[in-house]
Amino acid sequence: MVNHRGEPEETSLESDCPVCKGGKFVHPLLPSGKPDYSKVVPCRCAFQADGIDRTPSWAPQFNKQKEMTFEKFDWQRVPLEQRENLERAFQLAFEFANSPEGWLVFRGDNGCGKTHLAAAIVNHRYQMKEPAVFIVVPDFLDHLKSTFSPGSETSYDQLFESVKNSPLLVLDDFGKQTTTPWAQEKLFQVINYRYNAKLPTVITTNLEEEEMDNSILARFADPTVSTPFHITAPAYFSGRHSSRKPPRGGQRGW
Image 1 (cartoon, rainbow, N blue to C red):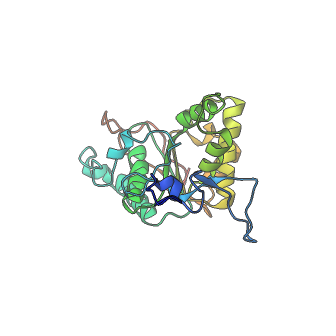
Image 2 (cartoon, rainbow, N blue to C red):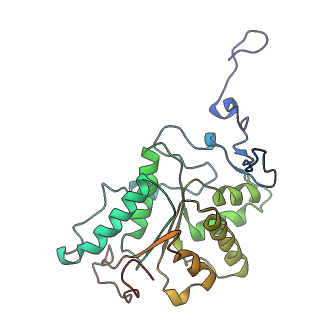
Image 3 (cartoon, one colour):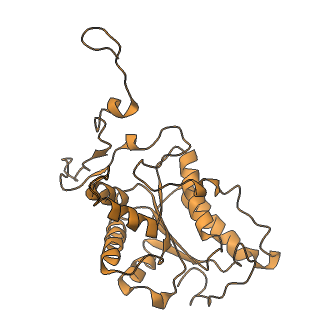
């Protein structure tokens, strides 16, 4: 690109974006086709275009989970007679990765493989050059609080609306967050918004049914939107059996 004097100018992918003009965020469109100025969502250019990592710049780091792919999922840790449950979980995750639709909720003990499968979905989408966001719930809440700092480069509204409207969102470790009213309110707002909009969402949790807020549980277990699955495989690192009781009605439920 050259300026009015015919001299070359430095350009970047961000400044070249004809949609957001480098701002990284845009207003979504209403059914009428007019912009909804009450909301902001990430522009497509906010995702890297190399097909390796399309995580928005404002999202928490995904470095550790980059190694968690479907190809690297360890089957050897599970005895053959216990492998059927994990194979079904793998199949659900792989199908979701290829065609994200509705919600997929993995429940199970720490180390059972649910985080690996959730991260594998995101990595698979990156390989397909499609956007996805992986967020560890306690980290997300900390990141959200940090936007109130005067030195924050991302505003609260930008981050919160971008997570709510992410094309595909993974909420990992749901239930490990602090139980302050503020944290509960923010999480419910994200979950309720994505539930009503039927946006593709993956959630991992080790909470039992009775440990969940009824309004959250109703959304996680709604068969018209969500596919809940209890992973009963032994913990990944210890090789021990799950201490959780089987869900009522089989593994495809709570």
